[in-house]
Image (cartoon, rainbow over all chains, first blue to last red; front, side):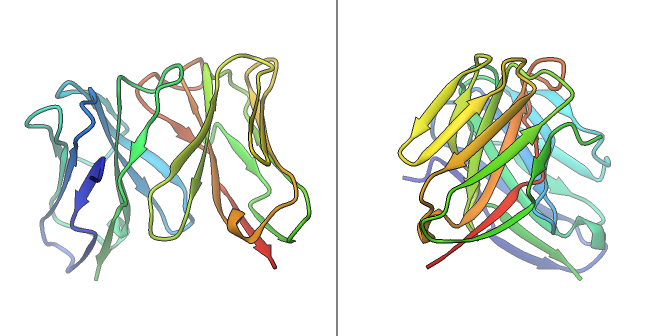
Length: 115
Length: 114
């Protein structure tokens, strides 16, 4: 059973389109995240949610709108896609935040290519 | 602002050699984690260090957290081709971060040649 699963794994779309990436975790964790990994492999936090509540929004353009219908799901909707949005988007979860020895589990990533 | 400086960025060595990867910051983190990421997959946690001066061993991998909790190192003894991958350090909490996000270094891409 996959702990953190995200779909789709690959997405190729045109500029200006709207797309969504879905994420689900079956670990019973309270905290979920979206990270973006650029072409140089740099991973940067986008959003953190704890028990469906937004905790961190790391100056992400408001074309990106996360939604957490319940604490097991955190979806990412992107409006008006731009070329610079091309990246790998990782969903992750942890029991409660990142402090102490909390283990953060990452999904396999969603490869978004905007053409 | 890049809070965690990781070096070297690229490392190509022969099987059997030893290597060290460094992760340095001017800020204090309450914990530091090391991840390994393989192509097409998400990062996988290797170890978390919490206490200043803490040393953890995972088979041929040795992780150390600096006394001031601003830096960390990963040492691999007798590297094998299976160690090839992207190694990432990440800090949490403290003055350098938050308890609800990880701040990542830029990664070290390690290639171990047979």
